[in-house]
Image 1 (cartoon, each protein chain N blue to C red):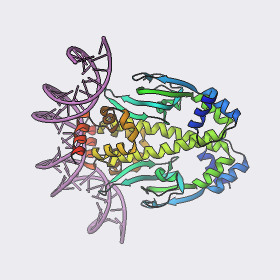
Image 2 (image 1 turned 180 degrees about the horizontal axis):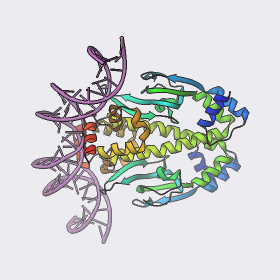
Image 3 (image 1 turned 90 degrees about the vertical axis):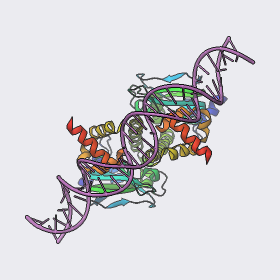
Image 4 (image 1 turned 120 degrees about the vertical axis):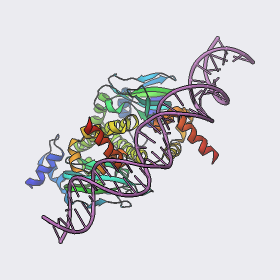
Length: 194
Length: 194
DNA sequence: GTAGTTTCTTATTATACATCAATTTTTTTC
DNA sequence: GAAAAAAATTGATGTATAATAAGAAACTAC
C-alpha cells in the first residue's frame, strides 16, 4: 500500500486524509502505463474517466473536417487529462488523446469521483478549486488568442510551459498555437536571430 | 422576503433548500441595477465578487497594448460574470466589465461563497457542476477558434447565442470573434446573399 | 553505420484579413 | 423630427500567414 499511498498524497498534496479515506480513494484509482503513440481515447469513445499524469506527456487533439489536427491540451506530470467536452456528461469523445512520451497515469471514473465527493467533501473542494484555476487559465488563453501576434503566442507558450517544450515536437506546438509548422519554423528563426 | 426567495430559487433552480438555508443565502446576495455604459469592474480593481445576471446584457473585455478591445465573455439572463482571471484568487482585474443593455444583477463575494459552501455542501456541488459545464464550453470554444473559418465562427456564434445577438453591436461580436468590424460586415453581406 | 523515416527548414505563390479612408445607415438626443 | 453621434458598410491597398513544393537535418532501426 505504501506506493499507492504516496501517489494519493502526491495527487492531493494539499489535503490531509485519514488512513481510511486514503484506502477509499486508492481503490478507485487504477494505475496505467502508456507507450509513445498509444491512444488513450479516440473520437466516438464514451468518456467515463479522466487521468492524472505522474510522468511522461500526452496531448488531446481535435481533427477538423479537412483532416487537420488541432492540439487542445498537453499534459505532463501533475496534470489531469481527458476529453472534457465529453467526460463531465459521460458522452462521446470528439477528440483523441495520445501519448507523445512514455507515460505513467492514474485513471479514475466520473462515477467513482462522484461517490468519493459525497463521502469526502474536501475532495470536492479540491476539485472545485482545480476547476477554478483551470477556468482562469482558459480565460487567459482566450485573451492571448485574441490579442497576441503569433510570435507573442509562441514566446508566451514557451515561458508558460518550459517543461512541455522538451517533450513535444514543433508541429505539436504549431497545432496548439493555430499556425502551420512552416510559420512556426520562420518565427523560431526570427527569434534565434535576435 | 418573497421576492428574494424567488430569486434564490431562480438562481439555484435545481436545488431544494430549507427556509433557513434560503435566508442564509439571500443575506449574502446584493441586488444591483446597471444602466447601459455603466462599468461594473475595471482594470486594476481588486475583484471580490461575481455577479448573477437576471436581466439585461454585460460584457467582459480585455484592452491590448495597442488599445484594441477584445471581448472575452457576454452575459445575459441566468449567466454569471466577473473577471475570472482575478476573482478566484481575489487579485486585480485585467479586464473591464461594462453594461451594454440595462441590467439587473445579484452580487456575491468570494468570501461569502466560501462560507456558504462550508455550511451548504449542495451549493458547492452546484457550482462545481457549473464550472464543469463552463470548462467543457471553453474547450469547445478553443476547438472552434483553432479549426473554424471566420465565417463558420460567426454562424456558430449566432446559433449558439441567438439571444445575445439582439443585445449586442456587431463590433462587439467582431471583437469576440477576433476580427475587424469591416471583415464581419463583409461576412454578413456574403451570408445575406446566399 | 547505412537506409529509411520523420521532422524541420527554406523558397515561391496565393489568400484571407487588416488597415486606411470615405460614405451611408441607424440610433440617440434635445 | 431635425441635428448630432454612433455604427455599419464599401472600396482600395498592404501584410501576415496559408498552401504548395522541395530539400536538409535529425532521429530510428536493422
